[in-house]
Length: 550
Ligand code: ATP
Ligand code: MG
Ligand code: MG
Image (cartoon, rainbow, N blue to C red; front, side, top):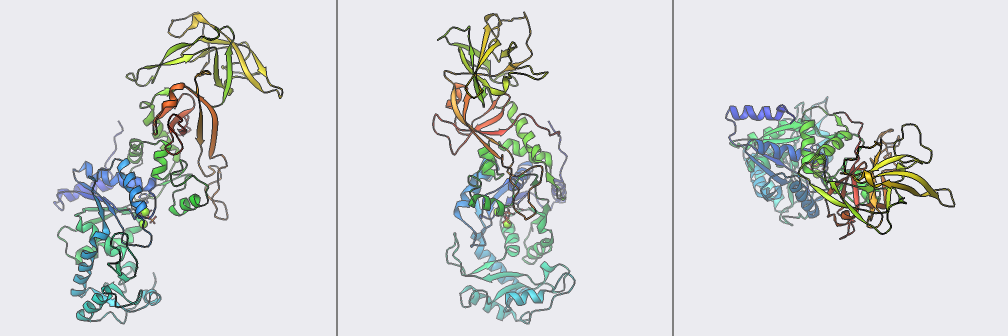
């Protein structure tokens, strides 16, 4: 078991608990329902839910649906499914920020009554101009000194739909000369006539993210509001909001670095374009790193969890090697899934001296790394398929597989010796001829002689002819993600479809999301989209070999 030291967030929580700042830890994952989640979100989900679990606290799934334009119910469903699949415990309870619109409105009124917010009639362009720059302080709005009474009346009129969209905003009254531009009287409410998926046409004013988010956290009793680094500069505003609203146990914002992976496409914008251009097969194409893709590809929640623990959380931005993730899934599946024989590039092998019409069965171990996995019966007869690459007419040195005159072990069965081969008119090898030695039957304890190579095989008579798909990264690993013109540098070999793979017969009954090791060929799972009953299609999750050294 890997020992992982406490991350900086756990250290903050420990201290808060010690000082009695909070008694129960509450975290949340607050996605905007505007797209599919990707592996970066998985980090946030597992971090937040993991902390809640570790500290015996509570983890909330909350849809941050305060911006009606981009949000869709479809995404609420896909996100909920992904969070569930990852095993984050949100007790089946879903929170929506839009359910707090009344409280947010009341909070704004409270600020106005404290003289901490005002209605401003400047246009968006004027507000930008007045805001100043990094080097120059801003200027006060001419509407900054409106009376509390006037502000209350105007804000209510805004709510009641008495002004056109964009004609007025409510602004926090903070400090136009603050070195932090976010503190220069930020807009906290705007007028916009938009139909909201939850509240319909009830509201024509909507709160801005920086105002809404701390209120959402405070309402839910969130203690540690964990977000990514781009919000660091917004933290003073977060603190201002919760302090001015005088919450008894104000939540605190903590930032960490986003997860980036090498050689994969994570940007929502890019993924969307790939989907729209038909370059990938939807948001769950197995070559993407959306959570739906990872699930379809055959990654497990356990592996993702381990991966997140191994890479840790920090405040420094860095890309993690995609091969590290592959290493973790390989380790995860090693003891979990059975090992089967599957021939991806089949060539026929005929055992000339084996009785025609006869079938025998071998007991083959399901998983040598799991003593409880048991054995299964695998049929064997005169005609088999082996991998084309396991035979060579003229082998190089140190080639220990089949070639004329050489003997190998057929895994779990017999020794066979190559006695010839047939070619078609074009000179392609189509059949390999062997003889077998009945003495060498697996399990007989034969010690007479040794062979250097073992190859896998399937019985021609009952093997399942399947579609198997192999994947490589979507982008060209050698040359980097983007071309000079900003377009994506695609790997032309990201998808290989094999239509005539030959698999052990029992794989015909494999069910969606069931995974296997195909010995020597990697880990595979049954595709959830293209498989039919009794006709599973297999996706390669990951190959067996890796150049990655953890
Ligand atoms: P958008 O795509 O709308 O710009 P987003 O991808 O950050 O935003 P949100 O729905 O706003 O998506 O994010 C939900 C949560 O996931 C946020 O707390 C955000 O910080 C976190 N998150 C997003 N991307 C990553 C990432 N790459 N690594 C870790 N956490 C992330
Ligand atoms: Mg999002
Ligand atoms: Mg966002």
